[in-house]
Length: 424
Image (cartoon, rainbow, N blue to C red):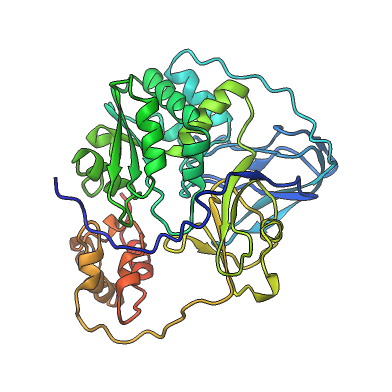
């Protein structure tokens, strides 16, 4: 089977052998009420309230949303407006820790069927831990039957090794999470898809799943963007997700590897999502490592913990180099979707020049889009041509911008062009 196009990137997996280290409890955390794709929560606490670890402090009645929980015990010291890195405004709850880490009364949920699993996953506050933040309980409830569960262990972005450490440190949790979801959702097969540059993880999964003929280990080429949903589906199963389709329309469900492991841990412990493993790296970081931090911890605390030269930092990215987002203020908190923090003292800021029609962007695009033509259609606001060019298929992987010798902001233009297309 022919594999989809992509680009070769320097992996820079400096932290792949760094076991996860627990960070000290922060003095104060800030919990934005919008940490997932979908509706923001409304605070359920007010200034002066006492909270415990695991207490729910924000929720929303909208189905496409998940609650927010506290990762520290202490006092609510503020409920105020918060501006995220994407410019959107929501409420945020500030909690000052008392240092006691007193636990709320937590009970593991009882799972007997699909409905109880989906309800439990929502109450856990879980959204996709790969970075997109899609509410997991929505993903686990597709409208069409799914026969194959794909566990996304590609982690193809440079620097990031948070999922890789999950594979090595919590292999059993991954497998038990797979079996639980398969059983409750009546999914026949599962495929753990891992890039070839992670041989230890492949070996470990192969050994532990050897006796289970419903779980296959798929070795993927080390090519970016191997972890993109449409790409990993095709390269793992040969199935094509057409424009306007969902993965479930072709009988597939894709779940991030850290997400599936967390589902099992929550069912076992009842502890909601209050911590995150974060890869901290970049040329301004003296001690790159993987750290487990309370959600809401200020970014600056993680950078200091990893001996970052703060006075030299010129750019901090939340997530990966290709699809991450620049952080305007290091005092902002990490959120549920923060899988990496990359701090750089220098970066390439090349000037943009005219398109030379070399076609590199087309060859790099995994799904064969024509970014230069999309850019031209966008400039004249030709909506019909943008539709014909299938701009809505763009997954924002950034490959086109990366390979462009003229340094044109093609991926960014694709996203702007999408906003011109009316939604049905």
